[in-house]
Amino acid sequence: MLTQTMSAAGKNNILWIDDEIEHLKSNILYLKNKGYNVDEATNGEDGISLVRNKDFDLVFLDEMMPGKGGLQTLTELKELRPSLPVVMVTKNETETLMEDAIGSKISDYLIKPVNPNQVLLVCKKILESKRITGNQVSRDYIQGFNEISMSLMDNPNWQDWIDIHVKMTNWEMELDAHPNLGLKQTLTDQRKECNIEFSKFVEKNYVHWVNETRDKPVLSNQIVDNYVIPELDKYKSVFFFVIDCMRLDQWMVMERYLHEYFKIQKDYYYSLLPTATPYSRNAIFAGLYPSDLEKHYPELWKKNDDDENSKNNYEKEFMQKLLERRKIKLRNDLKYTKIMDSDFGRGIENKIQSYCNNHLNAIVINFVDMMAHSRSDYAILKEIAPDESAYRSLTASWFEHSSFFGMLRQLANKPDVKVIITTDHGSIRCLHGVKALGDRETSTNLRYKCGRNVKAELRNAIFIKDPLEYKLPKRSGIVNYIIAKEDFYFVYPTEYHKYLNQYNDTFQHGGISIEEMILPVVTLEPKL
Image (cartoon, rainbow, N blue to C red; front, side, top):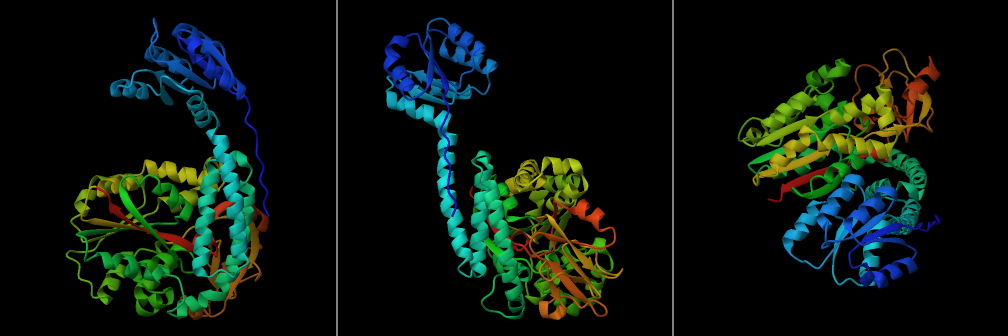
């Protein structure tokens, strides 16, 4: 079981500026008894001088003083120390004064007469909230850690695994805000343990999921049927966004920006294997398993299959055929858009209002996938995002300034529009390379391979002898697949160490992990 550690707060330096400081001695004495160092000044000039020559953690500032008043003093204090918390103390309760003070970046204000408990509460809120919150987070995490550990021992089903993933992701994001608690490695180790058990679970159950209709999660090929088609009769325009290679934690950092605009409902589904664009995303748009795509639309599939760079050139055609099979008649033609670069994305953002005239808009956004691959190729991006926490931060920075966010803000003003957002697969930070064998025709992917007689250690990968059993394409000739488990990636024996080092600590997809397989499906309804 995990045990917690607590750290005591050091002493904080407080400055109290008030021309009637003698009347505040009881408050000052009370703070000193609570362990705070308190300096005093009876006018703005002296207070500014003290701040210029000594480091303070908090200032209490009287609003009404002779000479240099509180607001002028506040302005000069902020010029000296922009980040210094200032609490305005005033007898004046007028709204304009409060707005002036808040506009001048005060941290809080108190109305005279103040009592010691009020003052202490403000001090704790400003100076010790991070420590107090951190201690509570530590206590709560211990409980959460133990709950997840118990869940692993209780033979979790597919719904339990969703719950485990959501809990771990929430904790990862909570600990991002408290990096000094020393709990990140504990959570990382627990996620690794979960992925070991999850890989066993998928290996045991996946064939049942793709061959049966009961007791199974929603899979990639059911997304349009379950979430998009039911909305077509209810709304003038439906927007279906597919964000390539988006993990659950990446969605959660984006979601923070959307609460003021939308009512948000979040469900989850499991990506098909391999968790890679040619299989999982084509399955989304076609509403079919990859083997059925090959069977029913051999020409389109073969075109996809012939060129590694054109695996998803026919998503619009696949979706049109899905709508035809479901006998769905749109009011106008399906609008399909794939955004591959920022300039094109800005162009779509500028005319997104006109898209609201289309009954169904399918928009693929490739930036998150490009970010994952670019991190593998450019040292500067690995320096900026050395781990999952920084990767989330990089995602948030992109989204805040992205054309995608710009589109969503505009759609939030449209009451007759429904937005559905999902992804085709996630990614995992790969830290362990393993040897794989195959001939020159074998696919080059790092997390899965298909070809004649591809092999890898079974403890690191699922070996698929009969592709049809897994609803995978037979391709031409005798083909088998290997799909990596956990955080392993495949390296050929030729120049093994070179490629082992090149791809170590990169975000990859195509394999079996919680991060790649358990994914959000989000519906947004404008708040207006």
